[in-house]
Length: 160
Image (cartoon, rainbow, N blue to C red; front, side, top):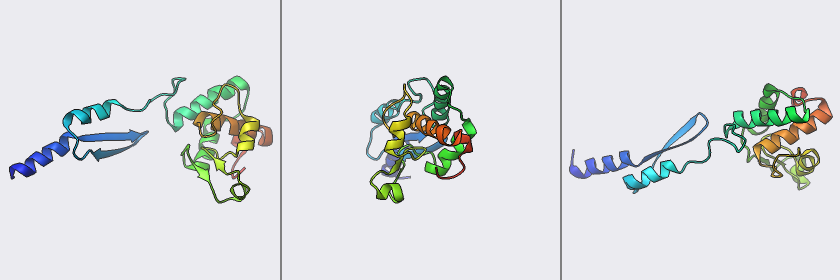
C-alpha cells in the first residue's frame, strides 16, 4: 500500500469518534482531526443521567416521572406512558405537531406526549421544569391531565 494511502487510513482510524444515545450508536469520522482532538471530543460527552440520577433517556424520563407521580398520587404505569409516548412522538422530546387543528389555532402540540401549552400550564406538576420540552415535565403534566380527564394515562389509547 502506498505510504500516502496508509497515512490517510491511519489518520481516519485514529480520529474515529463514537456518538450515540440509548442503544443506537453512530460512528462518525472526524475528517482532518488529529488524534489529540479525537480524544478531547470523546471526553466531552453529554450527561448520561438526569439531575435526579435517572438515565437521560426515555426509560429514565419515564421512571423519574413515575417517581414524581407516586409522590403526587397521580396514577399511571410505565407501560401506559411508554405506549402513548411512542404513538405520540416516537420518543422524541423535541417533537412538535405543526399540522393538526391545535397547530392551526396557533397552539401546536409539543414534546413526548404532544401537550399543548394551555394544558401543560394547567396540569404542570410542582417540582418539574416549566419547559414543555423537558421530558419529565412533559410526561408528568400529560399524565396529570390524563388522570383528571380519563382516570389514568393507562386509559388513553389514542389521541387525547
